[in-house]
Image (cartoon, rainbow, N blue to C red; front, side, top):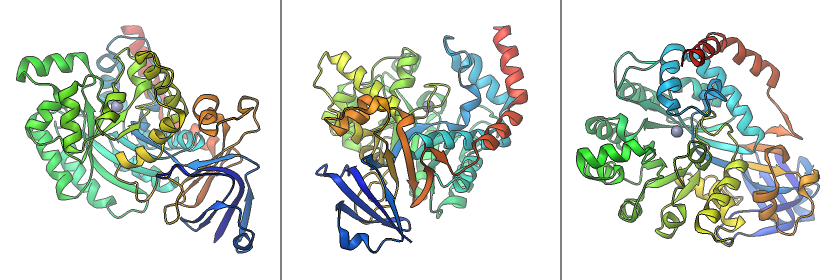
Length: 439
Ligand SMILES: [Zn+2]
């Protein structure tokens, strides 16, 4: 099946940042076969022709850090100090189960697809369920089971995630859309032997490893007192700081940390919405990029940043950096869109497959309409996407050649997905309300 998209303003996000204002893209099944100016001869070959009506066509966006199944927590205790230990951990142990993870994953995937995210890295519990949701909903997922130093909702023993991960990785290793990884929760919630064991599993099965790094104030204090090191130095001292590592947050990193990360090839998932909402600080991504560290954008869980879309993250990232350094020219719009697309793909080591619109790559595409009131006028298409657009401007989304969003309508039944989630959330919601009264 050959599908042609014509009359699109194509931003390829390739190495040269090639653009085609009157562009045409051809895909055959799951692969891009042509990107360039309109070619009438080639167009004759198409089985299906889609008129983009001057919309902006970009690569599918890559969310490099999420906990998609935390949807039930959204808007709960948002302004509460230490929400993690007061709400999240206890409610997870009490109420999270396989069915709730699955239904929340379906809902979150729907939300991401509607906002132009075609690939996401996820770490949570019952990750098999998230994989199943990706498989059913044509979503590209890089998924890791959480490893943590206490019993969890899906394992009665501490560090149960290690065994879970091995089975999980074996089960999904050759799936077209799901890429299994391993995900220790954080530097301060795993001991050295668990972190090393997780890294060994990543090496054995040739996967990524992802965790929260240098996110918390108390984490910094703990490592300084216990080891006289930063979390990054500590990870390096135990051999876990490697090119397999996707380090989420990295708010509190110093010059030496960044040099180490660059030397080891460790990449960063920058979760600005979550960092700033919690008042944790501004991550020095300007310096990271200068050091040659690959940085992508992440939403974090829907309870941390309240959204799973990267339009919000792009805007917040650029506002935060410009404000922090008092420099309007810092991080131009095209550089920000790179973080959300090709750089995110590099973080996940998938840039040969996704992240830009180039012949031979997978057909993961997002069409952003330019008819809505907020999208006029457009002098610079990158600016329009980063500063003017929001998730509601996403018109169509293709993942692996399948159009999952068509003229703002999902191919999946949104009402059915929401009702199924509400059904599974009943006990959770009741306990969440009770808990907020107790505290
Ligand atoms: Zn997180």
